[in-house]
Length: 120
Image 1 (cartoon, rainbow, N blue to C red):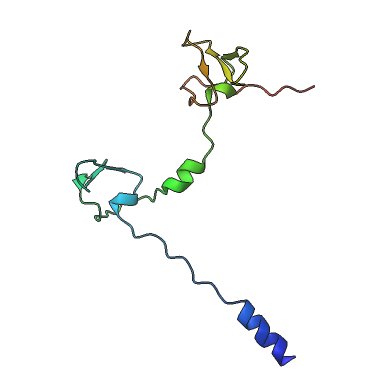
Image 2: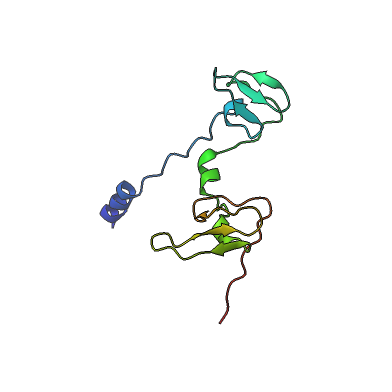
């Protein structure tokens, strides 16, 4: 019985808890990195160094931001599809455009209304 518990202990090792990232203006929601230097343009404090942190800091994780579902033109009610042999989401925006484009690539505009699902 003792051997089994020792085997379990070796198999199941406690994982090291992931440390949260260091609070700085480089990972703050209110900061925008400047392309010229490593400085950050903060909405509240102005231009500050990237390792500076104020009391109004809000974490912004870019990986989570990329995972969120952005609406695309093909999902909009105003997007009119036109048949195309290679692109299934080819069409034109009924509100703004007369030029046909791939609706699965373009991000939706401010007038986006989600297309109603067809129920049969």
